[in-house]
Length: 172
Image (cartoon, rainbow, N blue to C red; front, top):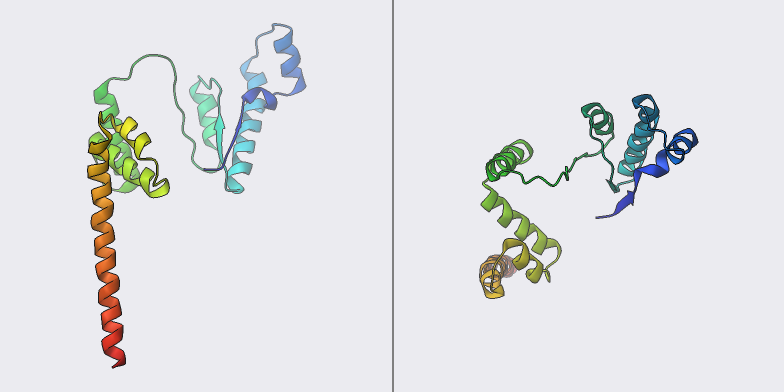
């Protein structure tokens, strides 16, 4: 992933910076142009094919709504320190996969989909996948995921041989 990451303060107009340096709290009226600049920056990066990572406390729904207007996909991660109930995570994953993929998968299935995708993009990341999945022994991870790749490779090899045989018999 190519990503641009910046803290949000670089987008403040000089008047806002002066207020903050003087200990004067910003008002919503101060924040709207700042948030618009952030949204526009995110859009310009999305148009250039880049992802963005931005850390800010867009606590108000209106702030998040304005930022959501950026082109590309906008995701908000809330880091308030409170644990999220397991049932909320399960429901959220199931609903999100249904909405985005057209099929509902359980969190357990989702973990394995993510693991397989990770290994597709980073074949040497078996240790990382083991850690993410919480396997105590890397053999567990290797047995499952290496086995999948071996079976897939065997199917592809068999198809190549069949294709080669068919080409060979067609030329005779």
